[in-house]
Length: 487
Ligand code: NAD
Image (cartoon, rainbow, N blue to C red; front, side):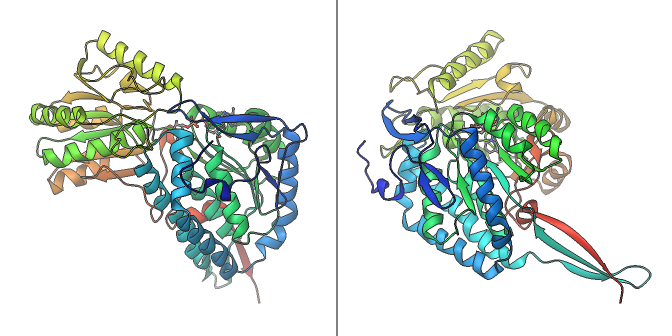
């Protein structure tokens, strides 16, 4: 494989991608699997196919390192995280290329993800200094103390769609809190995480504090670790169905859990919206990452008065998109994660059209390769069509029109999910009404982008439990301890 940037400087030898007790190593059987580029099918790298035994060794290593890491000063943890932040930013092009090649997103967006993902290292470097407790007096005058302790060894499981940011959003706060960990990235996109772990090693994270298991044996590894009494927490980002299975298993040991799961975000455009801003917003909220984001606008609800202008402008903008390899400059929409995703797009678009939707733009496979699908807009989509009820995870934008504000809000909230919610309106009163009624963990009014390391991110309903980022993020990795002091 010929890389454009100096990528191999951050990767260990092929087939030696387990990182346990401070050393890169192969799995006992030396088994590997290939990581392929969805844009052209080329194999990028051979990654160790870690076993249950490897994962157990990784947890043992995290357990051995736990006490010493918990005892480090906040200033020391900040130093390590800041050094890692600087190193990721110094190797921006390497991380961006890894992401583009292993999962398809455009290089421009991958560079954006480097800023966003590295931001969690910087933010939690600072939060390490601010995990304040409090002292107080009970009603009878005795003195109480509230402190926050590291939870202990964590199991961190990440998805393929934001290979860097989903890792730093967990590893950053866990390190800041004083926890040790076993990280398991998605098998489709382990290379970015491998490079991140190498950066952490170089930044001085002590042996055993961060361990990495690359593997295709997700279920067996998860079940073993979740049942191991040395584990104290699981933090998972991925689909709601896998999250539920992990939550069920985590009950065996009553583990602390953080679950960042699927979404089905509504994007509501009211009649009084600025139509140009609403179109600009929906293009970002829908087509960023080729629609493969938990925050992706999934159901576009447009009030009848503004709908003709909104659809016309949107159609023109989407027709202007360039489809191509994510590494090519000027590409707007690139390869999806795999061919199954493309088959699913074909099926849900055909199903919507069968049920009466109008195909406005796109709707078919794209000729660049088996993992490409045309950016697509559907209008007049019935709200019970699969494209509206299920997470799309691709470049398909379904529109349904509504009449009254109440009808729009009811349709927006009519989902088992509750992650992101977008609304466009120029009325302050409407904005406040939306803010009050939206069933979501994160809400953007007049913006198509809302994530940042400094804000608490997470869902309600079946989109998850817990918050990542913001002032809240570090406490997901700490236990609250109350102490009564009687003189
Ligand atoms: P996924 O659930 O298939 O996989 C996520 C991770 O879990 C991967 O590491 C995978 O290897 C692992 N895994 C899969 N099956 C497992 C099992 N049975 N036991 C243990 N681990 C298992 O999700 P995905 O396809 O990688 O990612 C897409 C999903 O992630 C979407 O639903 C998306 O909405 C969600 N997501 C949510 C957020 C959020 O912050 N809420 C962010 C990104 C993605």
